[in-house]
Image (tube, rainbow, N blue to C red; front, side, top):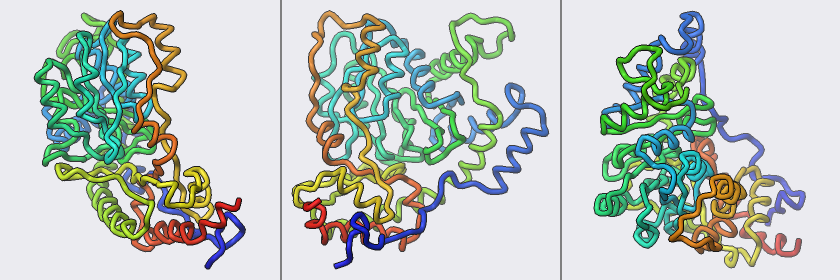
Length: 406
């Protein structure tokens, strides 16, 4: 058997995976057009073109381009009238912004566990988390896989709750043919550096509700009113406007998005079929209602018992030594320091909800033992690149005794 690279053997691969972001002359020309045109902010046409194209691609009537995905969530919550005393249901397995946006809107996140097969918000546990203070639900389309939107929307409509889809990882994802962001009351996207469509930073809010669209537009544009005077500010808002440079990049990036999504999807299916042959490696399942998976991440569930008790951290270390970058991902949001800090700063603890230690078993298993992340740029590689991922994991499995001895 070949010696593990972590023990000084030759790695499975030495070549880097495809770099991210992908760019070329088209991006340079788009940026130069804005630069020489002189309209870098308000007054340029790129943001308007982006809003029109993005809402068309995501099957919504309205869109508002903003500074970041985090700001998109906060603006959407404020537009939905979430505020002091309100509670917002969020999954405990997601990036911090899903919860920080709730705090920044002066509301309180209520953490709910995730589905063990998809790592998305477990719709079956939402009802028990609802109180008289609940204002909204934020399902996160994790890794590009849509949350269980039929069940979530049914609960929300029955209980009179707003649904804000966190689509930061789900550009062009679909649930039963409906684009992520178009199913709930509002959808929020991120264009941060790692995202499948990127301008370094940036965000987008989409909706089919004109009132929400107008509120979001006002909140992101200094409290102005559509069609109103420039120095008239009837509402309390901030400056969360996207620049023309960001929009120019995104318009070109969107031209690349469909082809890139096809490559990711094909490579993900290839990997999933290969991993069926490796005991102890189980990719997250794809729900039958998911008609397009964005694959911002490809997440494996690692079974320590099938690898002779070797910890996930040691497995990831060995995988990296073989030339396959991987990560363990999130920690449970409710254990993050910002949660306690925010509760203290806001002095907000609903009278009907005693402060207690939260423990959500599926989230903790995913965070502490199970999840292994492969980022989306790996999925832009060739079939040979995918084979190298499988070969590296197989090599570790075949030589697991060497890791046990370390």
